[in-house]
Length: 558
Image 1 (tube, rainbow, N blue to C red):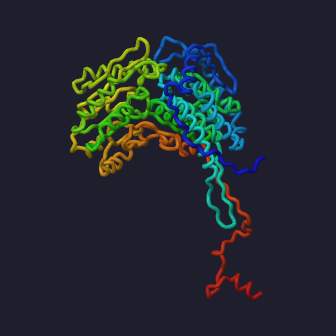
Image 2: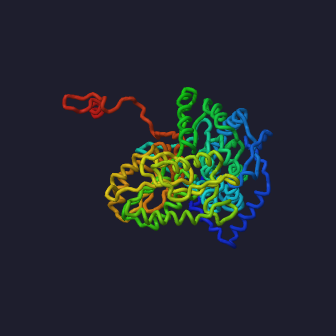
């Protein structure tokens, strides 16, 4: 057994490749896309390290080309959830006992596989399955997932290294145990890296996992699972199942060994999960860890001193990249009256310049929203806005689902700062602007803080440091990630760890040590080298009339 006190490779953020015409990464990615679009992949579940096929399949279709089938995944049932739990519990002790360096090596290898031979494949899967353009896929699927793995290894060692102080004659130590039981990872449709991080961060800390991705994430999730297995992940550590949410929940949330959930998804689902866990709390061997990020109604606040070109670029990118289907996407913007004409002109010019279409054409800035349900929901909000006397459609707002789920992003100008699209999370490329009187800056900050229930991301644009300071104080609890003169999106692992408060989640900052700490249970160990042999403390000694201890006098007489 090694007695080394191991260091780990210093984590640095994976460089984002630019995919310029003629670059090798562009050619390899295009080749991967062509190959994967020409295939119909058979996508099994993975339970206890084995491929599981049920014969009951569901098609995977690109959101931007919804008549084209690129894969079929095998749909599981209650029995497969039970099998996944059994596999996780059977693997737990050996995995937890494995030296942390061995666990680290697996995930470091997975990171290198994603950075190398799997880079084009995971990006292509994300572009095809989630309709993200090449740059969005590179940032999400490749770079962020690589960063999660490498930085989390570094954070893991940091956790194990930090130890309590010791007094004279005493050695205090701290162990960080994996949780007793299994962890449930419930992952969203919109980000490959989040989908990969939610099962791997608990696994890295010695836990075993049942992983259920959203159906629209299965295509990329299956690639990640192949990477983990190639990296040497033992059977049963992460078990990937494709079942409905209710089927998974009925089994998992009643199981006595349920130890925690790592979640990203809708607010309603997370609140229902929390309620269910509370109802079943008497069933569990320990209090489960509930870690989750839900959504946001993310804001950009502009002061009259804001730099307009920078503000416009931040709004355009922040609201419409990823088709606005990003929990940190800007969806409500507050503009002073003096700046609105210039800002409006910039936004109209930007949006009218958008190329909209499939991800395979790298010149498209906007692609399709994720599915028909999302499309129909967004179309209704747009239609309602067109009919409302309280809203003006400044630009955009057309849509078409004949080929793909395409929405031409609208900018809505709301007369009422509490109009529905200023308050509710739409999760799509719909931006609402409220114009305020310049002199009402401070009052508008209060409005920003009090609108809606979310507190995920927000930004302030200003060249006035007093105004920035005021915004930071007034909006302390309005956003878990706060940006100054930058768009309210774009968290980078190790730089801007991500998460929010209020209805946006438990704010356990993914991409930092704070998240990993949720997946361990500390054990404090105290060792005394020369323990006392008499229960009597000095204060118990009798004393003479002169105040000296009786025992001391007797010993002096000897």
